Image (cartoon, rainbow, N blue to C red):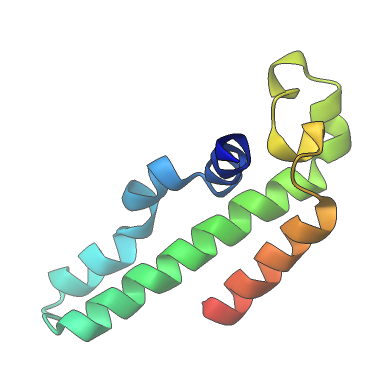
Length: 97
């Protein structure tokens, strides 16, 4: 069970999400937006957008990644997460954003 969770963490790139989702928040802060709900919405939009981009890129590059030795442990390449699940995650992220 923990290996599946680990594969989802890898696919969604959760450890790097914080640094990639904050530019819109910093932009809003720089122009004087201090309303916490608005900043949280911007953070969520950023998170959904980043996850969408990473998962869609991994899905589109599955065949190429199979040819690259260092990417053989990618969740989509080794098959622990299906292509359909990746597209479903993309769909949810588009709706969420």
